[in-house]
Image (cartoon, rainbow, N blue to C red; front, side, top):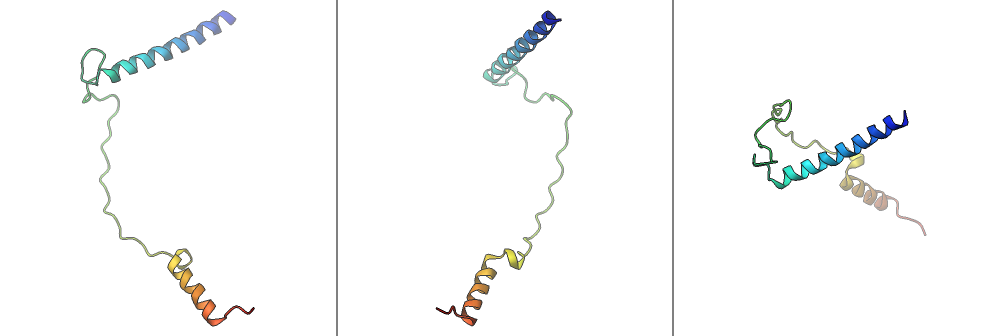
Length: 86
């Protein structure tokens, strides 16, 4: 049982290393279709069309409790009406 697990572990490690080496060679070849390279236009899996972009909506107004200008004006109004007593 243990030799089987060791063999599986070794195969996984060797496979991962080979995958990394092949990916590095493909990147170094510049994806030009040369030896070790890939053709850029070749599909590598299911292709999907991009969804059409929606037109951007105008910005919605900010709620008063999120609007810094409104909060600042509210603070100023409160200070004018009720000055702090010392």
